[in-house]
Image 1 (cartoon, rainbow over the protein chains, first blue to last red):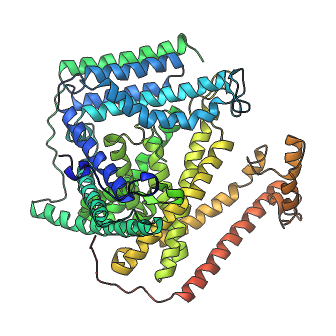
Image 2 (cartoon, helix red, strand yellow):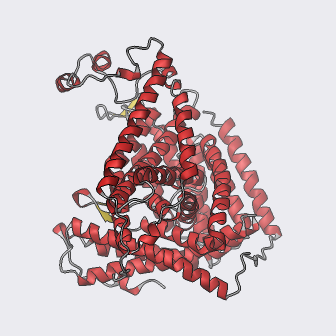
Image 3 (cartoon, rainbow over the protein chains, first blue to last red):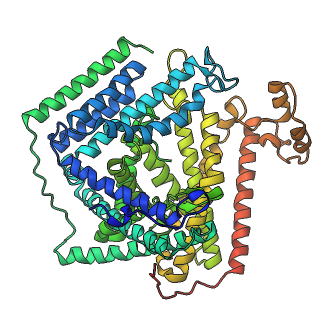
Length: 293
Length: 338
């Protein structure tokens, strides 16, 4: 459930320029992260092309797509891969707009900022497209930047498709079925649960602090408080580990982790995997023969 | 520092993805030996803590905020091998649940943040703290370990980025992945972390260690490091022997030009640089001792002299700190109030 407190219209103390307090901003960010995970789980349970696939096949095929995108060199083929992620999102009942916004606002924007200098004559000399003195945009520079941004968006898009169309529990079952040791899968499962639990604790800490504050507080005060609370979370994590282990023993844990995996791939799953591999080979063939770099 | 998919070419990410498999196997065996079956919840909680640490916004300069990685702190609390597993798990969960960091780049992110950072930070912490540190020395050691750990990780990331134009480019020389050469990528990553994220990591780690030392010092019990420290001396000797390779590479490191080199590039020497550049004359300029004619031998001798000087200064500082602060920290009652 989305934390109710995180969505109350706030009358929190504000600093210069109407900036909200650090406590409120952090609580909101954490509330948003928790809500996103819960919404993803809901989306993964809905109908759609990707949701209907066996998690092992989906994981393997997305890995094939991500690796294929990393081998592609030409911009037109990378653009086609970006469009393919949007097509798969649409076929899986995911809003193409929210999918694109998510990919662009995180990986895309960061890649754009990171590679922007490489588009200029300062880093990549060549014929100038947009004259801006030493920061003129050159044709080869723009191609380098566009290629990187397109590849990052394609890779991030395939990754996001797995996250948005697969329940975490199914992903763990897929990892287990693909040979990842049970102990690792169990640790991953426990980690996700503990992350959610600790995030709730941290969110409540920040909301509690905000409710006691009349001003946003100085940076020094806030830093001291944050470090103190991080130390508290560290201690609580270490102590909780013992409690969790005792609870595991009480429930009959004897050191082994029997898996209850019962995944069966259907003909459709195998057809999907074969089509995925064939598409990847085709994409790389076109990339190397039609658009040689 | 989370590298997304697309920045590293297959030649780089495949090697790093393959490299983490034996590292994980060794780490698994080491912590299984030390922690037995208790490892599952402990690793899960440590990984969750590592994840949550990155969600805490810490105020820094100019009203902005940043976040710490916490890998060195986890190494101090649980040992470096446990930190490898815990931070790796946190990075895998971040990539698979929160889309933070790429799927193909998981190996690179693990090598940088879950291997280089905790190992560098932990052994530096051990070196400065000694076997029975008091409050002050422990806190200073944690800060130095955290700072150097994150800077070392950022340099590794810079090297990974900087290698891309060399490893994968078009026929005309255009880079196909991360576009900046080593001369730009390494200083950019290192400076950003030396000036901004390094101090933040150090302040957060020192603060948490200070609170834990006051409230629950049992958590900071020194983890065994005698054998790995011997290994560290061996690694240092190996690196010193490899230093003459540096003489073989042409050119000067980016941004480290002398006045004469600047004049040959720019046609003049900036006035301020000309004045300040003559203030100090190094006793072994350009890593070439004046009394040795062979440049390879000279470089090797310079590496030995420099390493001995750094180790000597660290040892003296450690001794001074241990004299000042030689009483073990008292254990106080825990305080969990928010």
